[in-house]
Image (cartoon, rainbow, N blue to C red; front, side, top):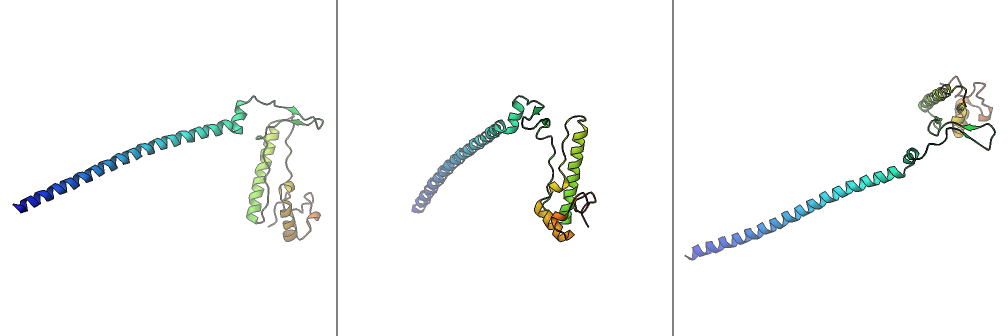
Length: 179
């Protein structure tokens, strides 16, 4: 009988440990669910804050104000110079490319960009016949002065002050880059 009582006591002890483990597991599940709810709330709050920040950036950006403010007059006469009129908006005038490289690939890429710039200026001027024209940046003005010095010295073998675009000596004249 004592063996039977020992087994019954051991069984009761195991049930008690099992119940303790079940209670711990239930507490862990409750904590995990609480964390899960907290993470969902934090994610939702994060999305709302990101949307609010995007909305704030959109409303405070220059583009937003450009669309919400009254349109600026199309033509403004500059009082400093006689007969000069501002007729183009900032984004309407094409920006001239700048050459700062030295390799043939960079030169070709620059010349392609400059040709595209020339076409954009020509198109802008042909769309407004009889009005003020956009002045094209000369090719020599688009090249970094230090690049001119390098090209003149190493590729042409002359000082840069002896090179002229009109004479066709400059490598960026109408005949293109040498080589």
